[in-house]
Length: 262
Image 1 (spheres, rainbow, N blue to C red):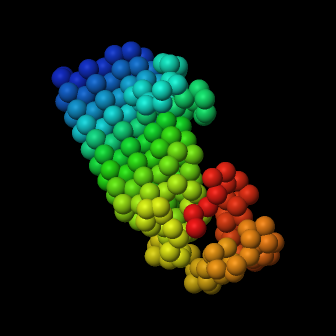
Image 2: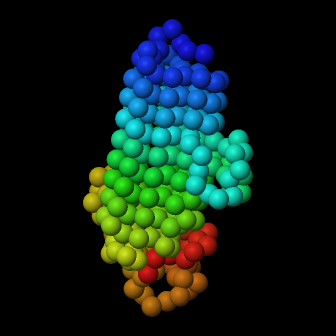
Image 3: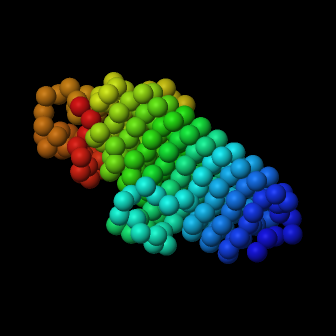
């Protein structure tokens, strides 16, 4: 179903069960095929490929050569009906790739709202990207990776499959992340190690000075106290009673499977 207000260039190919909602624009030589929904006001530029079972929200901008919903690169994938789900107001730049999920995990790859995926960013199968993130040029999110809200993964960095980058964390360029990056932490290197808090990111996102000081105390408790993480946890719980944002540290320590970066 193509809404009367949608605009499709004559050279674009649209086939299958495709819904284009109000004010969607589709540029020249774009190919859209499969079970596809593209939400109101989304701009799909030239030479874009959108396939599979893909749901795209409102007011996204999808730049040339992006590939969304293509078969993933997992050798176990056998053509199952898995999904890509993309929220609203995302900017997906040139040649970015977002692959569909697998039946072995979540069945879907999910991108939230208000994200910037830069040139040639690779979002592999079963990845979960939150809201307001920045995924840099040529950054790679391996399969099953989770990136929290307001996090940044900068250019040429690679996140190992099954790792988590916590909310408000920042992974500097050319880094290789093989364990979880706790929330708020600035990480850099190959393999990535912690370099304090992402203070600039916290300030830009409205964290008050007192809250940042407490988060830094929590960071020091984890990384500089000499205590084990088991010994550290009760201290963080006490901090979280006064500063609830500390809870994100606790949640990661309780759920990490690969361990945190050191």
